[in-house]
Every structure is written in structure tokens, then in C-alpha cells.
Length: 427
Image (tube, rainbow, N blue to C red; front, side, top):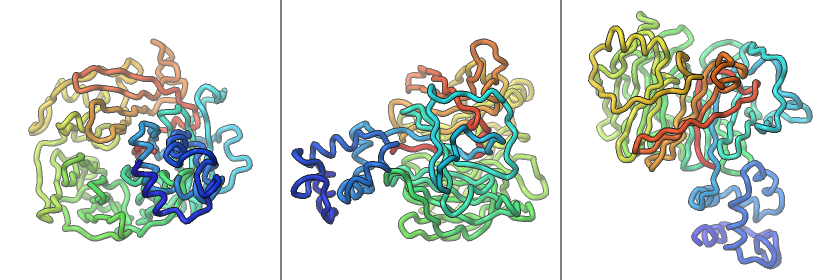
């Protein structure tokens, strides 16, 4: 096994068994087969057994072996406003930075259905779609910035939090945090800050680089500035400015395409009037190009309600339209249409007429694509009819033949806030 040989080369001793083996009486190949199948929630515990186990769990090779063996678990990371009432027993005995865990089925739902937000407080909620559990975490060095963006670096098992507002001053910040989820248990660190403090900007992962563009500054001026982050070097580099100012724009990328797309947004003098065009940065030429007729809804941002999907070998952009967008599309048409709808998916009755939030759960191109689908309704939402009581989240599973299944997620109340940003990856 490749992971065994490379782990041995990097291990410095301190094995768990006799003669430096991982498990006494077992070849390391078999021991690793066992360890990669330990559920992710126990990784922080098994790291404490011995140095060899810790070195193995923290190795990127271990992360890749879990994916290769099919033992990896799918995490959905959500930036959410915190509800006014914390989860029962969620903060007792915890240090700053510790996780708050809730397991569906074992969690007693609170009788009080209040959805008031704690003023200015956001949290990083993590839903384990494989184990059907929820927990919340935050950086040891401080709280979660309001309206920050989260991006998953799936190749190395890391999550980035970028920009947003300082919850005390309500000013945009350039801060960047990285959660190393793939190292077992997770550890936080500060990364190099962005060159420009910004919020409500476009961002996307392209290969091993993170691109950001647009948004607005502390005077609510829409920005044209763009920059790129090198994960390995922990360094930001400014890019050429976009042609247009773009606040509340969306960033898109597709696996196999080296370009970074920035869709819609609006300028300083036309706040709330979303543009129909997009701009695309090609790193090979170092230039931006504009594409007209991409987003038809002038009163709605594509952020949150659309997602990039690799369906087979064909990149697609999926829209989940609320009632206002559906009415506009049916009654007035769209502006400068240059796109083509390849298919239409009927939403569950619980989601009809809402403005949903979506995040792509697909691991690149494959036979299936998964989406986590979350609305702003309360745990008791959905009108309580048609079997919708409490159904505010779904995972949609759709294959290349167009077969679609909706799997309901029963979400505890303290995790039911409408997300601002989301991302997902395997650990």
C-alpha cells in the first residue's frame, strides 16, 4: 500500500505497538486499513494514543487514503447567524474553539421555536452528511466575521474563511482563517490577510489557487479589485482590475477549467440593480473578458441560489429559483438570454415558493451530483402541511440520466438559520 511506505518514510518513531508498529501483532498495512475506517468524530481522540498514530492521522496521505477506500465522510460547512437560544449543553465545559455536537435522532428539539439572532454573531456549522450529525466550531483566536465567505480546499482537507465584517465595528476586514479539518479533529490558524478589506465578494477555488474579486469597502463602494491566493506559499497577489464594479457578485469555477468567473453584481451608483453580464479571468492570458446575457434577474443576486456542477464531463450552472424569479421568467421573459436550459427539476412542496440556499456536494465530475438544500424557514416551517413539518433541509441526488431523489435533513433549531455562505468536502 502506497500510504504505508510513504508514512514510514515520514514517521519519526514512537509506534503504538511492539517494534514501532501501529498496532501490536498486525502488519502496518492492515493497521492502516483499520484506522482509515474510524469515524471522523473520533480522530481527535486517536491522535492522542501515540506519536505514530498522530503522525499518520495528520498526514495528507491518510486523508487521501480515506477518500480512496470509500471511508471518507462528507461535511457541509455553513456560515450561519446564531439563534438567541444556544443548544442545550452546547457550551458547558467547552473551551474557546471546541466543537458543539448534536446528533439527529438523539437531539431533543426545543419547545421554543424562536429564531431571533444574537446581534452580530455568526457561527461555522458543520453538517456531517454521512453520519447525519451537526456541530459548531469557531477559531481559537476569535469569533467568526459576519458575512464571511467559506471555501473548501478539498485536495488538502482545509476550509478557508475570508473577509466579511468585524462584528464589533461592522467594518469590512481582510482577515483569512484556515481550519485544517483533514488533520483529524481540526486546528485553526490565521493565514495571510487579503490585500483589500472587502465583503459580499465573489470567490472560488481554481486548482490550488483561491480567487476573490469585487464586493464592497467600508464606504459601501463597489469594487473592481481582484486577487489570488497561493495556498502553498500563503501569499496573495493582486490581479488586473475587472472592467466593472461588482458588489454582491458570485464566483464560479469548474473542475478542468482554469478560469475564474464573476457573475452579476452591481455598481456603486446602481445598488440593488443586478447586472446581467459576467467577467471571466483566464490565468493563461492574465486578462478578463466579459460575457453578456448570463443572469436575467435584475432584482436578485445569483449568490446562494445557484451552484456550479460538473455533470459528467459537461460543466453546468444550476439555478434554484424562488417564486419571484419564476414569475418573472414566466411573465416577462429574461434580458439578453444567451444561455440554454437543459432540464427542469421539480422542487419538493416544502420548498415551492421559497428562496432557497444551495451548495454543491459533488466531488468533481462523476456519476452523481449532490446538493444540500436549505431554506430560511424555522424547524416547524413548511406550513405544517403535506408532511413538511420541520423539513427545512434536503440533499438532492441526481444522476446523469436525470433521476432525482430528495433526502430530507431534519435540522435542529439552533442550526436552522439561513446560511450566508457554504462549502463542502470529504474528510
